[in-house]
Image 1 (cartoon, helix red, strand yellow):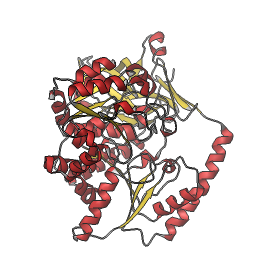
Image 2 (tube, one colour):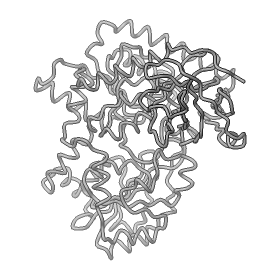
Image 3 (cartoon, one colour):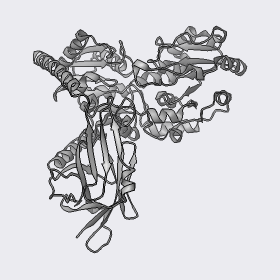
Image 4 (cartoon, helix red, strand yellow):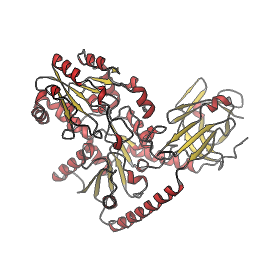
Length: 555
């Protein structure tokens, strides 16, 4: 007889850690490689998720349950759950029993809101059924009206799909819902596709469609045009959240590739943001991703969590927009981009350059801002003159503030807007000052020093959340005091933390990431190791879905 007991339960952001002891019939610890664990739906006595031990220590199994992705790109929804312990072949042995104190269990109750007042509540109790999930729904009339609207849009999309069914095989759609032009990774892929086709370096010639708009616009005609382009394409390549795909199913015969516009920073987004303001719904466009990209195997899991998909579907092939950055950086003073920028911003000539690029505050694009009152620009200009450097201020694209630099400071401080790409400005910069922005990602590849001005660290963590500990992962000194920030800019500058960050976050920096996107993902030549990993994961999830157990004791 096998006996299993839940020894401890802990929340870590969107993960519930279930720590279990297992004894065999001789009351000895069971071998760690002889067991498998399944979260079990008590109402149907079937498997809801496979739980793989993250570690075993002191005879205990540490089982992480990601409530936003139980393994099949679905949230752990309404129901009552227990933990089935099985042998290595999946044969049922026993259910784990939980008899932790009621007070301790009560303190572990969580409610995860999304899209306003809606949300999922997770409560813990004793017994073989120890996890209870309830759902708080929004206004029924509003849901019905919204559902009817999207049913009509889905019908329109399906009709367009039939119309283009013979012609879409070689059509690629580059889509952004964040701006009226494409940039970054999407632009890099477009340019390289066109270059390769001109040189006849691709297996086939593609028709390239582009859709770039601000999805906050409510124009029906605009959305219908995007739906038509999507229906006409076999490969859809995005660089961010595509809101209409939350509700419109593009079909299983489409590939949706996610080339996220930002590298790995600190701020939580997507499903990493659950439990904080602005969290997305349980079903979203992210769930439809066929493949996403990352710069390293180590960061692939961060993106998988963000999108709520399997780790195996995030391919560490590099970041396309960094190809040009690396090429230009290698040219040094011969870089045409660098020469152009020095002509455009003459105050930077013969000076050290500090690039200040913070992220926004607020829920989303509509209310994005940066608290400029936390910058004493007159004092900064004085220190810059004394230190022989100039400052470029590039606020987040969603922050619309302009003309905030006083005329008396413009000899050493320049505000930069949409006319210059952030990655290009990095070529000029000797140091980056930021806060929680993913700008650190590209800058680290250049091995240049960074300083972090985090005056609202606690408030930001509470409102937005971090997907990993902030100070532990910041590749440079952190301060919340503006005077101390200015002192740090005077040096000495230490790049050891940046070097360590770069080694962790980049597997390949060869300037060929865009080619790998085209070859591996668009043309379908994904290396065997990645294909096999996806196949194995999908087969495992199919087996889990069909797995049944004996009735669970609900008392």
